[in-house]
Image 1 (cartoon, rainbow over the protein chains, first blue to last red):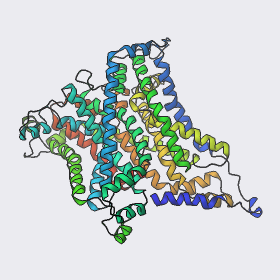
Image 2 (image 1 turned 90 degrees about the vertical axis):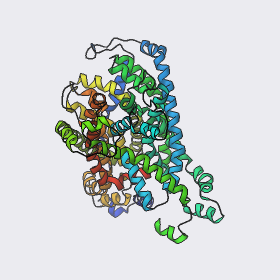
Image 3 (image 1 turned 180 degrees about the vertical axis):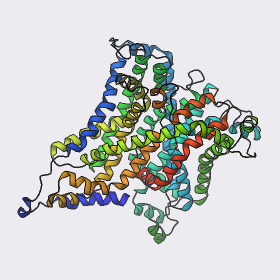
Image 4 (image 1 turned 135 degrees about the vertical axis):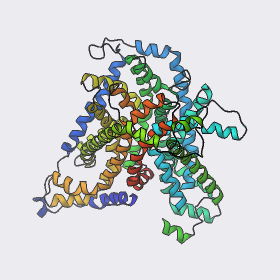
Amino acid sequence: MSADLRTGKAGTAVGAGRPPGPAHRARIRRITAPWAYLLAAAALLALISVYPLAELVHLAFSSVGPTNLIGSWPWAGLANFRTALANPEFMQAVWVTAKLTVMLLVSDLVLGFVVASVLVSRSRSTSAVMSLMVFVWALPPLVSGSVWKFLLSSNGAVNSLLGLLGFRPLDFLASPTLALWSVGLVTCWSALPFATMVLRGGMLAVPRDLIEAAAIDGARYWKIQTRIVLPLVRPTMGVLAILAVIYSFQGFNFIYVMTEGGPGTATANVPFLAYQQAFTSFELSGGAAIALLALAFVLVLAVPYALSVRHEEHE
Amino acid sequence: MSKRGSRTGARVGTPPRVVSGIVKVILTVTYLVPLLWIVIEAFKSDNQSIAAPDALIFAPTLATFRTVIGTAAGSVLLSLVIAAIATVAVTVVGVPAAYALTRRTSPQWGRVIAVVLTILLILQMVPQPMTVIPLYGVLASWHLLGSVTGLVVADTALVLPFSILLLRPFALAVPKVLYEAAALDGASNAQVFIRIVIPLLRNGIATVASIVFIIVWGEFIYATNFLNEGSQLPVSALLAEQISIYSTNWNRLMALALLTSLPLLAVFLFAQRRLTAGLTLGAVR
């Protein structure tokens, strides 16, 4: 497939320069902008993606509960934001989000780099391991979350294993500190296949000559990986880091399945808190304000990401 | 790549065998054991599961699986319908859009492309939990709350931005010479799109359709909130619901998890090479 894409780019370069001769010009249709092909998608996105985001802002600045969801929304100004920021649960959720994000960043970048370095060389065992990981990546978080909930439960397999090794059983999902680690590690586990594949893609693009030259000079594999490959895949790692931060908001899924934010609020991250406010306490506006604060943070990261992707494309 | 490897000797640029072996074994264990555990538990009876949830030696039974299929068959069917409609909708709307976003026919259109791409990139990054709250309100005002139609609309909104972005590199790979040749022959935009773009995009469409199907199949946040209580739930939402109910009946929960995963296994086997290639290219972001 990568060959296809390269041919595409080569085709662009070849085809660009030659103006058609005058004899042909009469037969050439004027190529109009294909706006009609974008119309359906643009209309649909405006209606079901952009408009709801505008409504999120509207909700956050209004006072809406279950009774007036359909009806008039009284203006509330910044009241919802003030309530959210004064809520100790919000600050705790920010902390939880930060901790989960750091775990995911370390796992994606460090473990991802090591695993990708191992899986970059082709062999039958490599493709078997990659298939397994990509399959797990494709599984719904619900399925992987529920099996981990089972494995980590008080009488689950992990505790049985600890028992066999002579350790006390641990409350993986019931102790506040351990629950956060459990949710975080499962999130890392589910995100690692993606990180590995993306980094592996970056590594495959590193010119072979560089690696071969270093190997001929006597450099060992890990030295080549850290001194030559690592600097060259740094842009990929940058994109991956941004995606990891955003993905850590999706840790929501595992929180929902494994702990429901508990024990207490020990594992509720910001999106989960917003969700709880909106759908458990039915404070739709309160939830919207928290969601908007989280979204603002995501957008700060989305801009450099969008720019880097656009930049990549222009090269 | 393999040719080059054999020419220069397999040892150059390959990780040391011991480290590589250890890492692969660790990966296999951490990713395979949970999957095996789902299967093992699904073949235990209620009594076996309660007595010894982690027993590895037991008389396997299909009883649990049969019970779960009995209660979840309708949900599986509903999930298939929802995922199929969303996949078709996204393809029908997304493929023309991806094509439109690759043709820089004029500087003005080039600017439109840049703006739309930026919007898509940002939309794609909005975490799903952030969209549940406003979509709940929007669907309510459109009287689509509690209906499967509303859920399909929400699912489409969830995957459309990312699908267009994923399809676009495939559309970009269509050689420009083909467009010029078609223009010389007097072909219209529609002819170009149907005769050239769609056939060349088959691979991209298959990749995107598989991923959309996978995501919509596993989606449960919209499904649990936008459908009415007591109505038929898609299988993912059913699983989400049962996680709290069956907190001790692990065998039933795992049987349901297995049932939820089986159709995905089929999609995965169909799309594996494309998924792997897509992820390697970094196209799936």
